[in-house]
Every structure is written in structure tokens, then in C-alpha cells.
Image (tube, rainbow, N blue to C red; front, side, top):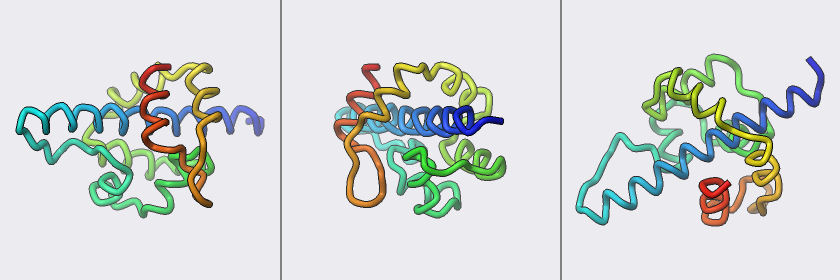
Length: 127
């Protein structure tokens, strides 16, 4: 597999992960406004770390598109998000080149290479 194809897969996975977290964050905000707290809704990378047993540094690298996750890590992340592989696959397949290009343009924070969450959430949900 070519380096470019690998980068595309990495970035697509990162976009998908960020989109899921962003959507969950929005759902959590809406539920909170109604007085509902959904503890199963994973709305941050920190919550994903706690729910998946994948260490935070690894999740950060994957979420920024800087690390290729091993298959076991993919499964732990998907299960940590309380999703099925089928649900994840549909979300992953829906990621477009436009989404990837928008993600690559996001500002970064510090040395982590993580897209600015507030800006990133709005951009990724509106792509």
C-alpha cells in the first residue's frame, strides 16, 4: 500500500473519530439542556480514554491523524464509543475528501496536533 493511501486512511479515521465525538458532544449539550445526563455518551477524548482502555496519548495521535491504529485499537475505540462496527463503518464510509481537507486545515493546539475543538466541531459538523 502506498504512503498516500495510508495517509488517507489515517486521516479518514481521524475525521470520523472527531465527527463522532463532536456529534456526541452536541447530543450531550442538548440532553443537558433538558436535564438529562447520558453517561454512555462519549463526548471527549478523555472520556473515550476512560471507556476504552486506550491511553490518552495514543488516542490524541489517532484523532489528529498522526498514528495508524492497530486493529485491536480500532476495536477498543469503537467499543469505547459504545458503537458497533457496523455503525462505525457507516460513519467512516460517509467521510468525504471535503471532510478530510477541512480537517487538515484546522488549527492545532500546542505540540499535540489536535484540531481546536470548538472550531473543529463546528467545521466537521458543517462539512
